[in-house]
Length: 450
Image (tube, rainbow, N blue to C red; front, side):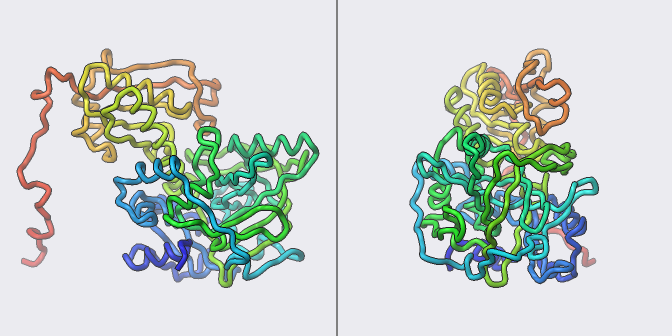
């Protein structure tokens, strides 16, 4: 079986990680509520959505373990795997046809009646597609760019699209200056490698993201030509909406519950006029709950690659980095270093803050601290930090507009915490150890049978 959403769902089934929701679910609030209950970390297959014959899936890549499973690696190898795919991208393979075009509709369709597009929050302006990967092509070099954008359903073949991706914005405005529509394809239901590669920064790397996906998958990504526009889409996707972003046309979009758990305001956004809908037989509609781990993690992994390499340039002994989910996968960075000289903790802080304007707070710890364990990080802060010596505050810097406290002034204060111990006092900060502790399993000892 070719690498696809369906092949990955089979992997999850084999390890008993895909939960089947048999009870009919309302796409208005109820479906989203179920995904939010688990923070988007538990893969769920919704067998029956009220009013639709199309099932849905969500929560499939809300953990590092599931991304690693999809790529056939251990979770500790994720950043290395992504780096290899960026530095040595693969090739794609164009097919004459593929499963995603088993059904083709070019007129008389109503997207909202075909697919169970959810309404997530009480104050959301309507139903939103949240897992749609938008495909566009550089008109000068022919490189394919992909990014996940949210889309508000306006009518039978009309969507508002929030375009925050710098590459996509730049292309659209160039087409708009010429008075031309910009062709886009919206792809739903793909292998996690395609989702992950879509989060690569176009401005930073300038790569064809399909080629990065091919390397992550370990095989050429099969593509097919769209029916009504000059773009290629993954042959094994579940659903594709082909269309054009109209020039000089805007439509109210929002409010919408965003990444950080707050409502974003209503704004005027570009419109996509859908010219064709293609889909597999018995398609599966993919959903990402906004602000869930599944929403944050793919982007966080790509940002971690950049963060790691920024820090490594100045502190070569960096061990690992982590952008926390509570920090939106962008605002809070935890960095582990093998400290060899005084000052490296603060040097790592400065490098992390310079890696991306969205990074707001940084904590640097020694390599004996588990950066993926919030209690361990808090313990390091509690026992290894003196605020007057180890905390750096930088006022008036750029921040992320997704974080509402930044928007009060348009700038953000940045903070770094050096939670590493002084090298001269290493023995004083030695952690207590029990020989053989990791081999002790409580279930081998405890029982409720008296």
